[in-house]
Image 1 (spheres, rainbow, N blue to C red):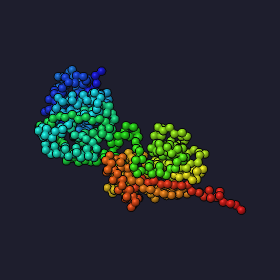
Image 2 (tube, rainbow, N blue to C red):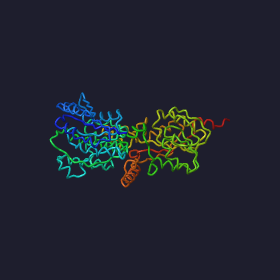
Image 3 (cartoon, rainbow, N blue to C red):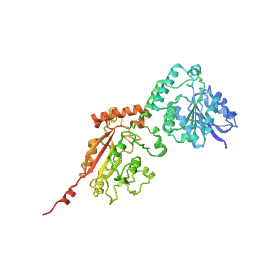
Image 4 (cartoon, rainbow, N blue to C red):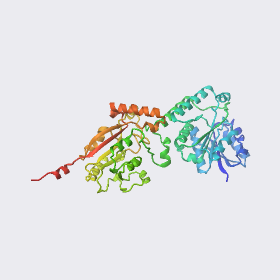
Length: 491
């Protein structure tokens, strides 16, 4: 069965070029496809629409669909419409071919076939495979320099190896587009960069095909300065999102695809994970309230620890712990267990509760039979220097993870974390440790990430409240007034 191919042509005042573009499409080389041409007329004021209608009337054996916008949607806006059209009409592949003749239609099959063969998810027709070729093709020198500079900068920030981010000659697998929140992208020209970033963040396969450069009498509607600034802002934002500093839904690929954030193992560097393991003795009975405990399971099993987890997150459904205690922390209806626990783990969970004070009250009652238990609690530090720096400039952005994780309902500092436990009258904070930011999760270069960890650890020793990304607290139950009353002797 033939795959369905949509050739999408955005057209804005392209009357001088549109017929040549349409006639040069190599239909003979696309005979293996069920092909449709979609022209989106973005409020053209010339004869673009009339010429496309003339072509459609002449080529009756070819399906040509024309959509005319009631208002100008912009370069990114028409792409959104086209990709939605491709999805709704069950196409397999969609290719974009500019209506102004800036890209050679006769090369279209070279972009299409790699996707048809199932080898890649997207194909870019790149002009910068040869700098001399780009200049010979008439690329203006300012665009040539800007293209090279921006692409190198983007590759550096995104750890990618794309020859040209700024080509408009592309083809996509429609299945790949379904995985991307492209509807959230800009309506302006940097839509092209945003969708490449989404492809990279999704770890989808991108192939490049060399094409020749064509610059003629086409009128450019691109504001080069505005475009360059938008590219810099977009790429910086995408990179900083990996640090949990800024947040844009369009780059939250994991949540878009799975409906939840994905948390990663942090045991291989200084973190709340490996610090927690150092406090747990072999053969301990552990009450596990932690969202992150799946990352500790192997080590705890090796130390012959017996674990009693509370199911607080869907991630726990992947585990096979015995003695699973089914409870909903959010309702604070913890079942009283007859077990005596040595350790309670609660990593990055306290900040997700609506009423942590109420939970702490219930926890103190639940641990009445475990007066010697150690409670290990971690939480992000809202006074981390990067958050303060952002506030200085008016930014307070919740993100996919980090200090301002979207799931956080309460934020803590060293003093407020200590206070919330000690004001209950049931607990005493014995130790508090500052944890550096998880640089290795955001920076692939090991030398740089290890250096930043070292510097961060040194700064924590100087001013932990300012430079700690996370707080790890070791807490012990203490005798309540009720306990003291029971222990008195009446004479």
